[in-house]
Length: 337
Image (cartoon, rainbow, N blue to C red; front, side, top):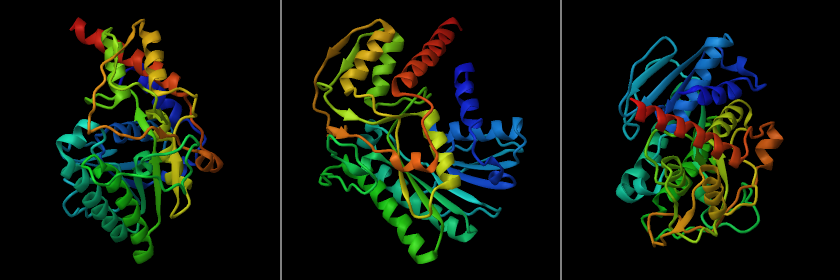
């Protein structure tokens, strides 16, 4: 992480939460090397190193990684039963394909990683008597309305297409979580993230990420639709700050919408904002891509998590500008090597 990314980590780690409730606790995270998981791990590492909290993380990912006293990296495919002999206090299911190209190239894997992974992690939560957190998505709502959707909105999804596999898998995971609560009495909360963005190191084919890549390279920003869609977004730091707050204080059985505050921009409006930041132009290359969302409205009402005590640290435009600065610096550093 560069200095700007670490500043965001520090901002989240300094929030006035009851961090002491993580002392001497073990958090097991699927997707620990993913975008949200890796940022979360850095925040909790900062609490351990600089605030004296005693937290242990068990990170599950397909490639594993190097472990230390704070972090245990395990190479685990969550689609298989999970055998972990140590104590666990919190189980977080963050593993999933998360962008259109992955949905298109691996629709079956997208569904199974979510559902089989959720089932195996719920089983582990039952075994360990741990609190369970499911990372869900605005995609469960499908087509929304011009009015922001609260957690009771049921939405509309055309399930008769492969692109719907991600949406329906997240819906099924939510139902599975509620079923485990009813059958086994586990304590569980659900976080429904808006479209998460930020300086992800992995290649991402979501529209906002493609806009960002073009801006950083100094190219014209390409719109593949007319950009009239109205979506909610959440910067990575706000996604993680909300996750921590809901893990600590969310009400058992409840789902929470998470997004930065709406600033009235369409998808095209965000492309034009990035074009202004990068001194570029927007051009249109319209295409009909079956892998992308067909929703024209997907705005989220965030009254519920704000009533819980969470609020975003960034606006969407602030997050975009910070992402641009970070990625531009990384691009400059890489060309100097």
